[in-house]
Amino acid sequence: MLQSPHLRLFFRRLILGLGLAVFFAWLALRPAADSDDNRVVQREFLAMGTLFSVSVYLEPQQVPADAEAALARLERVLQDYELRWRAWDLQGTEDTPDAHADTDVTTATAGPASAPVNLRQINKVLAAGGVASVPEPMRPLFERAAQLSRLSDGRFDVRIGALVKLWGFDDETHFRSTPPSDEAIHAQLQIQAGAPALPTAGVAYGPAPGIQLDFGAIAKGDATDLAIRQLRESGYPNAIVNAGGNLHAAGRRGERAWRIGVRHPRPDAQHRLLATLDIEGDEAVITSGDYERYFEFQGQRYHHILDPHTGTPARGLSSVTVVADSGAAADAASTALFVAGPGGWQQQAYALALDKVLVVDTDGQVMATPRLAQRLKFAEGISARTVEPGPAP
Amino acid sequence: MTRGLLSRGDVLAVTLAAACVGGLYARFWQPAVAADTVEVRVAGTSIGRYPLQINRSLTVEGSRGPLLLTIEDGRVRFSKSPCRNQICVHSGWLSHSGDAAACLPSRVSITLSGHGSEALDAVSF
Image (tube, rainbow over all chains, first blue to last red; front, side, top):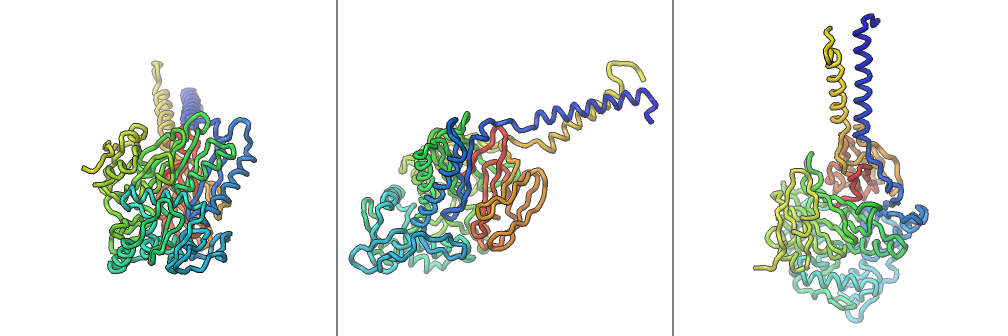
């Protein structure tokens, strides 16, 4: 068929050339081998109304089976944590079994403190006009919440439970499709204004008629702290905990740091991430955004981050990321900064002693504090204006 | 045919080989932080791992009915969900290692992984 020697030579060269081309393309494109991949043990589970993913990096003497057992224990701890801090009874039919059944709730009466064992029971006592005692294991987070509420001038406030319910954001399965009436919002704001503040060192709260407590803006961050603590005590100092996008990492992933990305609040084909960041030591990275939990009504987006002062979704920012040592503090702070908005987040960051903050406003402008900006590797085409936190003028 | 440094046949072979390299890069190159696989779980149990380079639609049976996952051009998203809140659909396209999304009412989750030198361990959102 190929009678011509020139043609035979050409095809031989062509086949050789194409073979070399495929070989070199394969060499260049094959994933770089990561010798640390098989030292990472990961477990995923649903808890606290979100997807948890926990990874640990094994030291040379550690074996995967032990790590898997430690992660299974951690899952049970976090399931218990959820039962303690969930503000409401679940309304769906897929509830996990409730180990803390409400059989031991003390009937709420005004007067002597009752003895609830979880937040749902505390809310039931408050709803009945009683004084709810705070169980000892829950006191540290109550005190932390009280302190952060004071430092944020109420922009972070766990007393907004009834407001969250009014907007329907308490039910993961069934948001509202219309905003509540102005009258209903105003009435709830009046109740909050007249209610006692959360005591900073108290062991009880109430009476506070009309008030329901919701720790949703701090509990996931606190859970990541708890998880890192427990893993460290179990002998796993190198770990990363992801509670539905709320991250806390400690130690390293073998030869390199734990590496995380920050999702773009308004992604397009080129920009799904704002930036990436290598974690240094023990740090939490928590983002609050308006882009996942929301409903739309008459062309307006109503998201789940409510301003406790106006009773409506906070406006002006689309995402706030806070990097801090404590997940609980970063979680509450990201909410407070989001509520403070484009004109106030710098002062709020200063008041909360935060130096690592990344903010995107609803016009798409990206801003970062210098301490964080120098560590972020921004996605191509994205740049941030550096803004120093500072006191109110 | 003249016997120069390169014959016309050589030039044609080199051109075709270069086009082959370019075509392979265009088809398969991805950023180092990109994921190459998505793992789908129902109620915490893995039901499959799927390469992101092969476009396809997947119907996943969740506890509230079927969900539609779309894999397209190295990315994946929840396209349809029976739940009212649509939080998983709002998550949009995911393409980076370490990223994840879940439809909690249906107890269906997806997690992306990759093996590039710059692969991410998690994404904050």
